[in-house]
Image 1: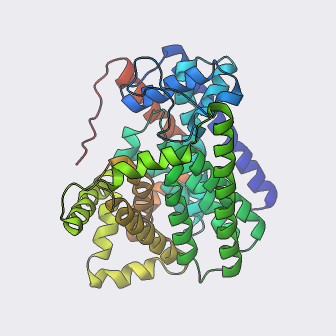
Image 2: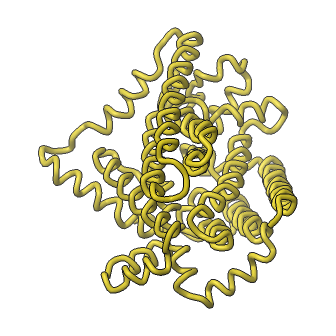
Length: 405
């Protein structure tokens, strides 16, 4: 496709997504939507409270009246609340602002997901991934929320896009750094997941086109940017509250995580790892089973490698490295939660979808007919599932209960 054609396609995609997100925001506002999820309600109320304060004070949100958070909110940095507070100050209903912004994070994430996937698979396959990951179980659970997961996934995708492009053009290291800083301001210490993702990607792609030296320099630039952002956030927080942030945040996060349940350290960590295994299989279902079924038997491994030669094999290698590293890292903590592996579910599903497309030509043919209408199918699936979630949650229509293992 020519540069002009690419530009027109991108403009169309942005325009269609913008219409969908604006329409979703209008519906959320008109219905005065609120979810039953406790964390989402808390974050929407925090953002609404910040909208009544000066932007200078947004770094130090407080628990809203009647919530389980008392005083200053230090569970995470306040970055997740900045855009909703700004939207509310612009006149949007304050208690729905976080849900509307989250819809925007999802749209941007899906736009970027297929572009990152396209580094390893054909563009048609990458767009099919963006279409089908919207139907995995974890996507139904987090369809309309006000918490961190969609923003976290977007930040990781920005970092991965920069990680790939910086191999040829070092300036894209700034994009990687921006993604990592975004994750820091949203999830604090969970920025470690961003570094795991970038390191796994650069290792998986080390034999691809571009310079490994550039990749290492960009990773160092990302670490420097995160350090400077953390220092700046601490200074801002102290200027507003007179108190430190990171020492208390890290103490709260790591203190609970490091608290042992018994003296059987290794058995506990193994049990934690096993606790996550069925969650990866279920929340990325059915594509997790496609991936697992293609890898468990040596007889099939060579066939998988033949289907995924070159960059495709790099993509599978990244999925394995990233998923394994995250599961092992989070297993060290005895505080376990489904949401900790949110990006892993999408990575595993993407790998399974790519394999399914190459394994079943009829399946590929059916999806190729939809791809002719890109970007409308991806946006239509998002809009339809969003609308069905609203109908089920707000109007009392029966909904699908997504079982959690």
